[in-house]
Image (cartoon, rainbow over all chains, first blue to last red; front, side):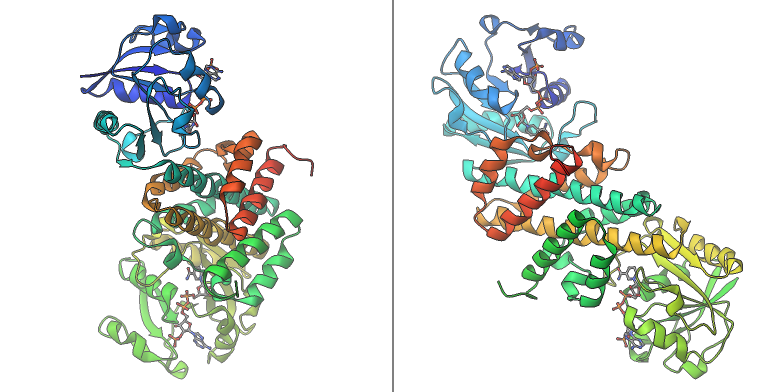
Length: 255
Length: 255
Ligand SMILES: NC(=O)c1ccc[n+]([C@@H]2O[C@H](COP(=O)([O-])OP(=O)(O)OC[C@H]3O[C@@H](n4cnc5c(N)ncnc54)[C@H](OP(=O)(O)O)[C@@H]3O)[C@@H](O)[C@H]2O)c1
Ligand SMILES: NC(=O)c1ccc[n+]([C@@H]2O[C@H](COP(=O)([O-])OP(=O)(O)OC[C@H]3O[C@@H](n4cnc5c(N)ncnc54)[C@H](OP(=O)(O)O)[C@@H]3O)[C@@H](O)[C@H]2O)c1
């Protein structure tokens, strides 16, 4: 049985706690937050504390606090040479205090406290400085039911950046679709099956192969019609840039 | 039993034929294409022809050919006053020859011949000039198992435009995610669960509410880091424009 202490009480920390509660291989022996009141709802299930000096001994400490607070919290830990990881996609593993055995467990998914989460759908990217820490971290991730992948810092940084494109920016395109449809009294809901199909299609086809539409076909007549239809200048700019982007990818435009 | 003639042999025509084959309410009595050889694989199931003069009598004619060919083909039909629809999101219903009873059955989904398709996931938008044509078109769409929605021309045009944003442009963001990850030897596959979750999230949450990430938080430090990381000028332009777009939506920026 691997003993774990969780630090932080936000989206990721809470889902990790709930995930570990269901496993037989990991036991959360303590849950820390700077403000223990947010842990009260769980105090019948686990020892909670807001006192770093009272931290229990454990095989692994998982720091799941805001990116900016990771470094300082790691330095405040009243021990050394123990295995401590953070869960951030963008913070360096070296931002953890060097008195510790350091690593990262980066769960590549969008977490929110309120929403249900199935760790089957959360690839966990593992990074360690010390090779010997890897098997334990892998076991912890596997116990949650997550697919795991060993990566280095550059790969993690790049995954985090790519996640902004496929998650935040994609969601903003949904938002623009919402604005465009509602402005004419059309129902955004009618687009939802297409949105799902677009995401599902790349399961076994590259996004390159999956592309269709006026930009890919270089259908100038339709592109012109669409630009005329858009009266919001900002939507027009997005249309133009992404049409240009598709043309570049599909060789319709010199680079 | 409603009798239907399909015109065209492409992605949409082929899926419509297969869909109707499974219903009890609609019978495809004939399938036309300018080039009958592409219909040969189906000639044991349905009467096929490349001769407009030989078109059979039917309750409904569905023109599922390239946008540019719809108008001319409708004028070439050797009859009048019969119900004829096209399946395009962007062509006007008035582009059909006025000698006909005109309408549109616009299936709001991405079709490709090779891929499986479930009409449950294909909202069919119905437009008619003549009110009396509507019940028959609705029955035809419902027979396929599709959700249906009566819309007007403006709504159809706007749905088609919004579909470009949520389908073609979204897919291009997946492509950029692919380029970014592969350039550092990271696996694009690790992003697939996040891509699906992003699409699923808006099932019961607006894209406005679903937004997260550095642009929404106006996290300048991370945005700056990301821009520095991107060495492809074109990816950088997409990052900047969509970050700006999110800031506008979430009131971080004056309009
Ligand atoms: N959310 C996601 O989708 C996601 C996905 C992958 C990775 N991550 C990473 O996971 C980590 C946590 O993210 P989250 O979304 O769970 O954050 P969150 O919900 O915003 O929670 C932040 C937590 O950090 C604590 N905290 C903030 N400043 C602190 C400080 N100065 N000292 C001590 N604790 C402090 C907060 O304590 P209080 O409760 O007292 O405010 C809170 O418990 C971050 O590194 C993030 O990059 C997040
Ligand atoms: N694909 C989609 O995702 C989708 C979604 C919604 C709506 N639509 C609409 O559905 C319609 C058909 O699209 P599609 O994707 O099925 O097209 P497609 O696969 O490209 O097939 C086009 C068909 O049109 C025929 N055609 C082309 N030019 C013609 C002409 N001058 N005269 C007669 N026939 C001609 C072709 O005949 P040959 O076989 O002889 O070349 C072919 O059968 C279009 O209006 C499109 O906007 C498509």
